[in-house]
Image (tube, rainbow, N blue to C red; front, top):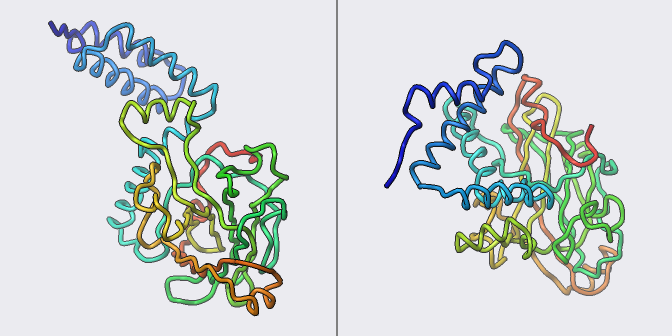
Length: 309
C-alpha cells in the first residue's frame, strides 16, 4: 500500500521549516534550492516507495562518491553536464547567438596554471612512448578573421588514459599547455596521441552505471579552453575519428562538428622534416569564437578546479 503524506499542510510546513523558509538569516537562493530538493526527494520516496534500506544505501553511496572524488565523473556520466550545454545552446538560439565552434563539456580534470607558450608548444615530457602527434589550426571570429593573441588552453590524457596531477606518476603539467596564437591566429603543438579511458572499475560511478546496464568508456579526446579579448570564452573538446566509442561516449560529449580527423603516417621524409622518426599522426582543427562585449561571457564558468584560486 502506497502511503502518501507530502501533500498535507503539516508536511509542507515541515519542508519549509527544514529549508529555512521561516528564518531571517541565510541565503534566499540556497533556501529555494534546498526546498525544491527536499520537496522532490519526498515525492520520489513516496512515488517509488523507497524503503529505509534503499534510502540509507543511497546515503552511503554519496559518502563513497565524495571519498573517491567522483562526483564530477558521475555528473558527466549521468548526462547532467551535457544537459547544461543543451540548456545554454537553447538559450543562445533563443536570443540569436549563432555561429562559432560548438561547446561541449569541460569534465572534472582541468588543472589551472599550465605553462604559457607563444605560438607553439610541446605538451608531453617524452616519457610516454605513444605515437607522436602534431596538431595545428587557427582561431578566428565568426567573420573569418584571425584572432591574434588568443589563448588556446589544451589538456589531454596519456596513452594509459590518465591525466597529470590526478596521476601522480606523471610530471607536473604533462600534456597541459596554454598557447598564445600568432599574428595569423595560428597555434601549433607537439604531443602524443591520447587514449580514451574508462571510469575506475571499482569506483562508485561505474557501480551505478552497472546498475543501469551502461559502460563507462570515453573515446580518445583533447580538451580546450579558447579565449580572446572581446569574444565569448569557449569550453570544448575534440574527439578523434575512428575511435570505437566515438558515438557511444558515456559522458555524451561527442558532437559531429567536433570530430577531428586524425591522419597517421609513416612517411619518413616528412617525419625527418618534423624532427621525429617512425610513425606519427597529424590533426588540423580550427576554432571560431563569437564576439561579445559582456565581461562575464569572456570568462570561463566559475567552479572549483585544481590549482585555481
